[in-house]
Length: 238
Image (cartoon, rainbow, N blue to C red; front, side, top):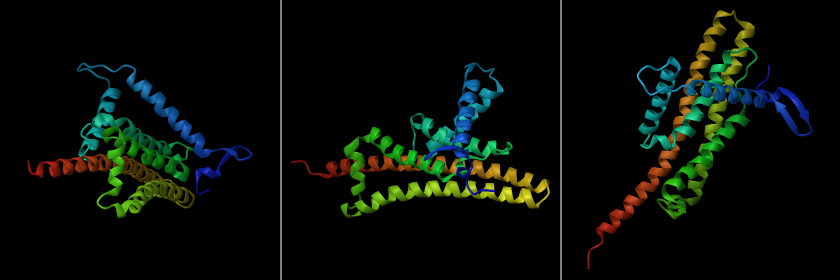
């Protein structure tokens, strides 16, 4: 039993390693790509749709609705990124029912990479929405003296995203592995079902937090613009 799928190494040459995390990540990406192609290759717009398309529409509609509820009304701009985060984490948990499969989200390197993607995406979406100057100005709000703390906040929430997802996924896998060795079959099956539920919850939390961070960045710009307009309107006419 090992703490992380990183410890299971299939091939190594010098500092270059191909471990279980890399292999399972590529397997998961292949499943998502092939699955997406199979589901979307025969999409129709009439009332008679397949069960796969119906399920896909439910998922997409649900993600769109959740994105709008956090304040991003133009959800079509963000569903590609946020939806991918959700599907990757959710499918990683769902595939854990397969034998010899270890979710790559049980590795800190995977969760850190996903958190870094959020860290980079937040300013990119903010700059695309409001421009570089307006986006950077929020780091000086409400006072220029808070600039160091605003910068530190960006890094700490990225670290929190990575550690939270890693801790929950890794602990679930470890508990299941222990139970398989000391208890009858029925109880581990129940824990596997609970593990799937935890995986879905973690996928939801991670993707929603990413949406909240993006919404906060964009809304901060909008609040700054509204404040500037209000101050301009208050100036007396000469």
